[in-house]
Image (cartoon, rainbow, N blue to C red):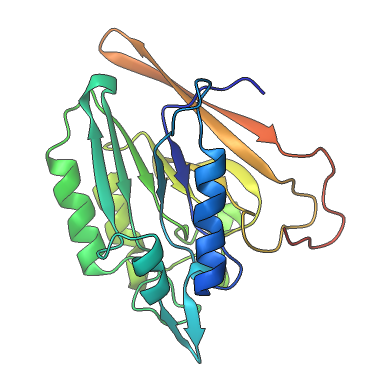
Length: 233
């Protein structure tokens, strides 16, 4: 593989169980791997998945995540005007109840406010862990969030305003489009890999053509063997 990335985005599940030791191990691994061709550190940005939260009964806690990875607000936004690029990271763990995922009003307001200041020529990527519920894409049940937890509001905000929505949670790879929104689903980093799936990375290229951009995604397997039964890292 011959890549020289501008940055890394990670969609959650950095650890299977969110202990301090596991998250510190993740941070050390990131520091050792996120280097460019010259050996310089490449920026790394992450959003939390359910496995990155400590589970106490039916309650999820991101205390360890905030302390070791951060930021305290969990969500974040980055502007790179030189590249006509905006990145927005969201917390999709909703009110921290296990298996009840979605986007709170706080997250939706944050997303909407960040998009208001976006130029129409910008390439906007939204990064979150859990996808919205879409039966035609097999994003169902606890693997996706419903209308009552922000799905409709999310589509109203992002439709015709973002280039791609990047997600994890479902431990597989899929390019999809629904309701005019393009998705890149890439999971399997810190949880069980779906049958038939491969461990992988996704390389996203953004090429400027005048006032417009061409965006392509490249699926890059990390090992060629497909899972014939659920496989953990």
